[in-house]
Length: 255
Image: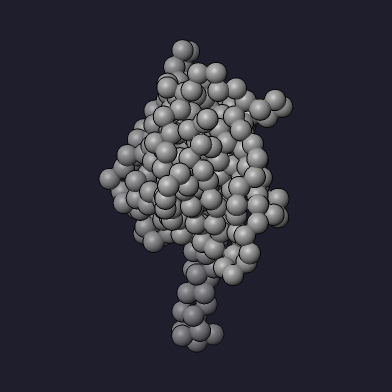
């Protein structure tokens, strides 16, 4: 075998080893369960990741509880996603895209009970340079699921976890006629809450409100869409990609 052929064989072998190592690293997800101290509603984790390392912090949460997750890091390519119970890939919140890009903070209401994964990771461009990111992750869960100031006597619809149900005007695509979609609203008081809409294909769309203003939605890696909202009179119009929803103020404020 000539010297050039030997060199080519060695390079090819090195590339195979490198590819295998990278693939293993990308699939290496460390799992840690988060436990609050007795009487506490929050926990703080200070740690670090390197390269393709990923950590899933598993947090048990009940439906309707308020979740406030935030991460402080000097590494500008490190983020966290939140995966709902039963999900391993699709995120209900993706810190690297959409609403709140770069803020590394999520505030919302748990749509169902179970184990939520708070996945800390580094963007591929930085991971392949084997960079190190230190971070401080804070997780707060309100045990009551209702913020102070919630309307007194705002009873839930029997057999549901919603304060009101019904139908709202909706459209699922550009040029499609308006129709109606079933909804359920969970109110937290002071104009805060979330509206869960059932789309014609049976999937759910959750829209978050703060102080009477639509602020975001349940974005995921597999379901991106530009979020826009406008308010006129007593009606908020929310657009997510080609989807459109019309939500009356009374749904969030009650009455």
